[in-house]
Length: 335
Image (cartoon, rainbow, N blue to C red):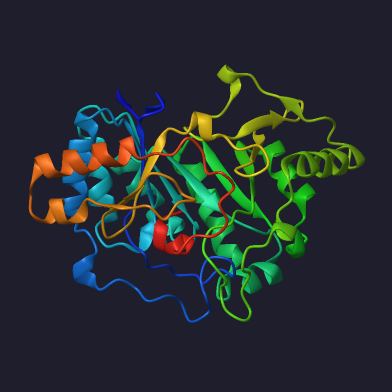
């Protein structure tokens, strides 16, 4: 097991396989996109595989592949197949916008991918087109259906809640009732700067704190006849490695979770490192501190890779200390 300087067990790696995406979400990047890293700067699949193999020998057991949009990376299925076959790797998951899942879900499952988190920040077709600037929400619904059909378990739906977007919280809650979908409401976080004239740069006014959000969802659910949200114990929660607090409605097939990085931060339980697509290790999402492991991977210097990995572990802060803003946008860090 790997430990950081604060005694936390760190066994979870979030690896961005690309900085490219097939959407242009308002709070993630400007409409014209961001300056993509040149192809030669992005880690090859072999370099990612080597990093995971080394990290696994250091105690990392759980891998999540992110982007950008990971399913636009050529060779992603082969990468998953390689990682899942490695000793000490217990599970590989993915965060995706779901658009390409109808075509790829079965081969991803066959390659060993265990579960997916699907990002969906509104259930309204017009609002989805506005937020993503180019997406069709029907494609995401088809992706959710495909994920359930091939047997990913659990299938989670992630919604970043932004006050000014006025999302339909009750509609999300209903998703958890009739199908085994695990809806997670995520506080809007201060990552990146302004996203262009028509984008959403983070502001505290747009973040709905946990207690307020829980009260809003509960009130609307009661009024609609769904009943009370019932807290789940440890053994009842959907499988995963994140910090969500989970609830369910009586007899519901899924759950409703709340992830509160700001109002009730979970830094004392943090169990992860992040790696960007070009090989920068980030000990904390809210910090701009990075450690270049990409150079060591390109030089095939295993001991140097281990040294950078340990340096990143030893540099994990005790908490984010309410830091506002990062130099990189979320698509450049890895979702």
